[in-house]
Image 1 (cartoon, rainbow, N blue to C red):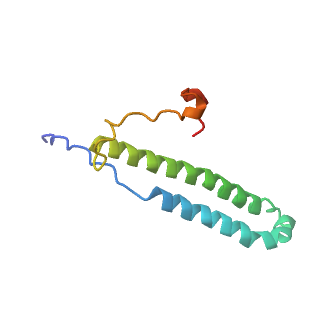
Image 2 (cartoon, rainbow, N blue to C red):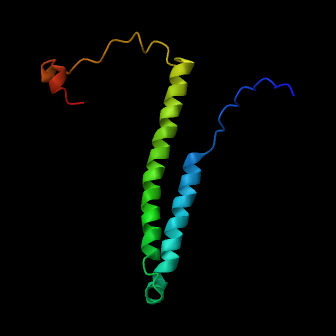
Length: 112
C-alpha cells in the first residue's frame, strides 16, 4: 500500500483562555462556599479537607487567571508589533521628552 504524503499541521486553535480559567476559578470558590457549612459533617466522615482543597483551587485559579491575562496581552502586543505602526504616524520621529528645568535636566532626577 503506497504511503500518502504528509499533510501540513493545522494552525493552533484560539480559545478564550481568560474566560475558561475564570469560570473554573469561580467554580472552585463556589464549591468552597457550598462545602463550608458542612465542614463539621465532612470532618466526622474523614473529608474535612475538601473545603480547603476547593479554596486552594480557587487561589491557584487566580494565579492562572493573572497568567492568562498577561499571556493574552503579550500576544496582542506581539501581533500589533508585527502589523507595524498603524495610526501612530510620527511617533518614532518625535524627540524624546526632556526633563523639566527645575530638575536640572538630568533624566535620573526627573519626577514624572
